Image (cartoon, rainbow, N blue to C red; front, side):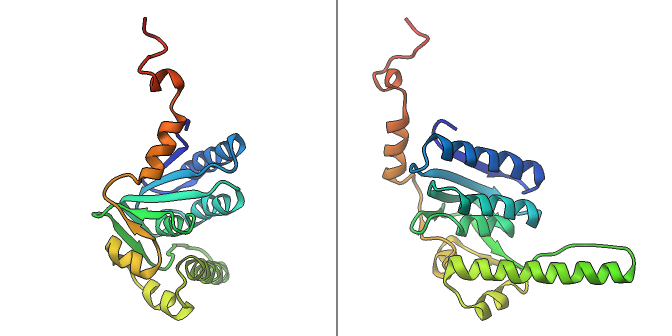
Length: 194
């Protein structure tokens, strides 16, 4: 955390969301104007858990640089797109995928109708968020989210999910890491050594 790095690896669930939200709030309290680097390698997961992370990203003042490595699928692709404009990146061999939300429910017919209406409402909400972050029209988003839509990083850039494909850490991020390094380490001294 001292380097202001947050990682989302694996499925997005309530446990992941709890940790990431706490990290984002803590880092903002430490320095609200300094960027946070969020690395994503996730197949997605629970929509509600992902939206808790998304809402926190929008809520805090710290800009969030998002970087995809491996994959950003489903809900993870929305988090990738929700990074600060101009600071949404992917490594060249990653995969980005968008699709409509899915869910399962069993029970009484009336309850199933209620849950169907809810998942359609969530789908509409997610479509609007993708429109906001990609600049695409609602028709384009709905068409492409109807089924699993896999993209290379270059295709994701064209689509508006990311701003840049990189194969090494941008110099601005390296400079931030060096600036955050304790003075003893910069001088080549380790606190615990003689």
